[in-house]
Length: 432
Figure 1 (cartoon, rainbow, N blue to C red):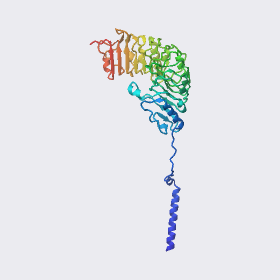
Figure 2: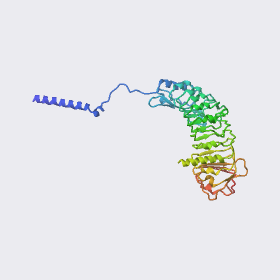
Figure 3: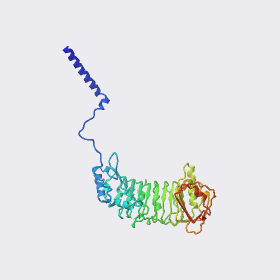
Figure 4: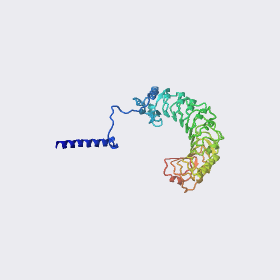
């Protein structure tokens, strides 16, 4: 009896051992086993070199509102305005744009401005591709030449940050740039200036170039320089002191251009025909340039490009035309009604005459803003000649008409503009 009990217990122990050994061979059991370690896994953070570079940059800045107060601790990737690559933890982004604008709240903007000096320690950020210092106040200091050595930059924005002096041509070394914004402040006494634009040849991939209020008076061949940028989509050269707008150009390389702003210069020429050959253009702002002559040939060119685009299955792209406050004259051509994607049309401040008919507006179903102001006439010489029961194809949100005769009766078509936010009628011949 004792022997049988001993044999039974031995057999039971043996079976239990076999059972646990079999469990060890299964994946489900292995998943229950977790290694125990006294130390945590590796913690990835930015390098000491890059952290030191950022702290050196901060040291020379003025920061009255404490925007950079988070720049403490071991991992600079967690600091405000600093962005790192998820895998390498290299600093790739520095976004220090002022969150406030002087248009919204000047006091708050002024308190939030970074200023001081830009430290060359930034050169240790070898992987930096995005750098934004816009809307700050560097109080008329020059743009440092060494910034042209941040060779991985693709986005670079120093706009409206009160820099002055000559823009260093060293920026032309930033061959990977796709976005460059150097717009100045028009009210600052000493503006940025450029002595030559030959350095832009170093930007084969540039899509956006903003240099509003930068003094380009010493650059008569500005168009030749810009024409080397085949990838350019937007060009902003407003109020730059330009006096030359060539009437012809042998070949256009910037055919992808969609936004062109040359307003506030002093061209005193007619509108060149090559502008109507920019088939991707959707916004043209030429206001305040002393442009002279008629616009029939120019509008005809635009409408022909629009028709050819429609044949290719694409809608005409022109959405905004601003020819305001020039010295243009003559009649407004009917072909303007073929620009069916127009959203905004500003022809104010010119010496127009003749009649505007329903044909001028026949396809403008997208139009939202219409501004027509005939300059210097006590008696209206531009007449809106439409039927009393005319129903426009558009629904405008903004109308400004001055020295344009639309009376004597209150025009019935205005009653159809149920989306209006702003209406200004001056000397339009409406009788009470």
